[in-house]
View (cartoon, rainbow over the protein chains, first blue to last red):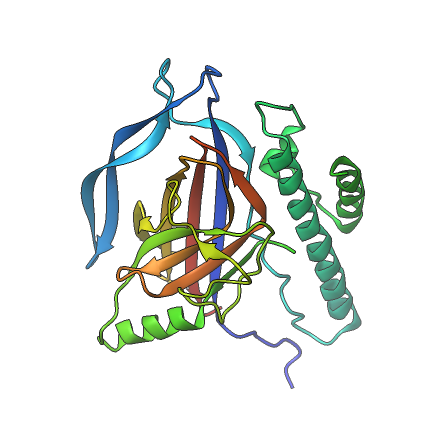
Length: 154
Length: 138
């Protein structure tokens, strides 16, 4: 029996989102929703087909920018890799990685909820809770960060 | 619960129909999901019956619409990834718990995504989606 085993292939999905308000992040002016020309593209038979269309976007009347202030960024997390060997260190690493993933996902859930409750036009909060960066880098940091957020959310 | 993303069973069936050159359409539409509490993406979800008690938004800029950009990319082997980007602009106050990525006939959901927490959208808010799916042989 080989010491290392390979795992099955899979279909992975990563979706990152970005929720912004209608206040220009540069000028802090209320933006107006306008029809803006946009080039929609599709990959068809190996070539990119571009279609012109009008889309509704908030536009800053002062600078013409289309980016509002960031409210929150929910992010995708990947599950820890399964153990590749039956050595004690491999199993321990998998257990620690799983515990870290659980606490990190709870951290992102709490920070997005906290950021959504405190929109930038109403309250200033630490930027890391809106962006998710920097995120806790180990299990201990994740536990401490969750402890702080549980107080902030109450 | 963490943010959950999954291909649905009906989405895989539609993909297989495409491979068999039978009646099916590709990834073309996107719609936001409405629910007051966070949902959990499930493989058994369908276009008509999204995760938990979520329903499709039908107005306020969050209803089903053509995806802005659909493209290809490479993660492990050449051309193994589909990418999709879209911006929703809300025209009212609505909760968004997740999204469905659908086919061109707007009757099959390929991918269901439920966010970490419910996003409280207000008028002129934008929600930018940046997604990718990879068939991984590693």
